[in-house]
Length: 453
Image (cartoon, rainbow, N blue to C red; front, side, top):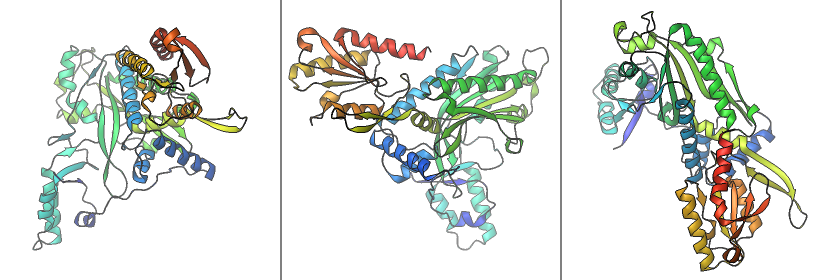
């Protein structure tokens, strides 16, 4: 069914009567020199060439603006890995955090006063605006009524968590603190046209006593910065700062941003707010009795929200992991080696499997057996041995480095006799000889060690 998403703010009547197409602009929020811009463009093209994002200028612009775009196989896997690690970080933090799932579209979602997105059937909208006998004011009233009858789509996860507070409070025997966590797609107006875009958001809504809310804001700001830096090649590119007083959300008393320093400027990855109790009271119609906790003061909890943009975070990790290293090839020619040194836990492909110079049916069967072992151990592998066009190993290594593949395993002629294979490391380019039976455990231990640092 065709739908129109329309903002429920009718301050500009003409924008309702004449809906403009979405205009896509390249959002370089902090313009730098030509060298920085060229580096940004080169990075985006590399992400396209190596299957992280799908090709197309519009898609690349969405990605650079921190919006959800059309991801390639490696980008989709990287995002899944990031969301999995995010969930582990909040649920295993020692605090009580429960996962919830809210509706992406709701008829009963609370009004937030401005900027709300609603969805309506295109045919109903067309019939409404085609009433030629109506005056301009009557037409505006008809459109407003249509939008008020239409369900709203979520722009964040806060409302869903506030709705779930009362049943969750009973789950924890009315004791604080605890949190409700969720991740998924939310809608955001992408620019002045009002045309919405999707954003992969993560949300932790933390409920605590009023006297500890400031400490909890600092705690979660520290934890989230630590998480981003854990997976970074250059941790110093990630930082945190207090939100300036003039930019503080109207429902909050204080805010903190987690920021990444891109080649084109700084962008926020996560925003934390100390929100008080006003929104929670409004959600539950001011009935304090069902919101009060067993903290000795019969107080209504304060809310600390932690909202992340995982699309922009994905771009941050890709940008942070990229290195250009000058090296000499086998003919002593100076070349630049491009490599994505993504963290071993996050990188989408842990190992690539290839065959040496003379591929045979027996060697292919060995590769298939090893691939099956990796799959059973949940180690993502790239079946390079299925490539029909012969490619020099040096070119394959360059390709795998740009894909961020941790290890390349080459099955050779002597593997059938000795069981030995060649293993090349992405980070050191050192090639080792190892018995085929040791490969799976070696890679598993390597990833586990990196995760525990």
